[in-house]
Image (cartoon, rainbow, N blue to C red; front, side):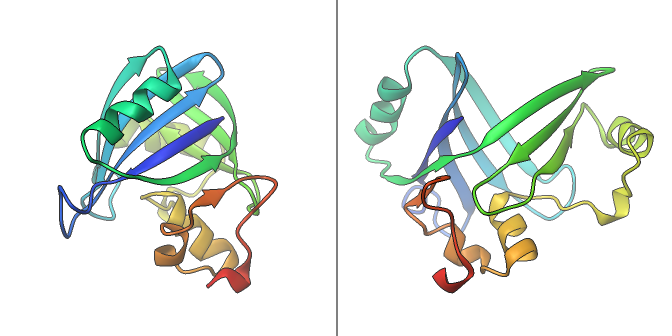
Length: 158
């Protein structure tokens, strides 16, 4: 999977908001995301399915929203009762599970069935996982221009 993120700091100053174009196998999406807090329901996301990765990235750039980073990861998706459980592998990190559903109750239920402690869940974006797992500050991760398997973040990047 590949993704390109876009810097919304000029159009949304002081907010944790960004754009993303992502290609996941044959599916290409264009997304605007904003983290508004640290809870399960605090990430706002609006997404469109598009048919061309390069054209979608050009759209953000034509709107004077600059590219921020290119990132790779691998993902395996499982669905149960309308809830998506994904196993994500990011460069330099151990694989981890992300569980998304229509509401917190169903996410808690599926998490429990899978043997996870919901109270240990991390809500937010990948920068928090890098900070927690390998100690690279989130602010450093969000400013790296490239995260790939050939060039994974290293602790001395901080």
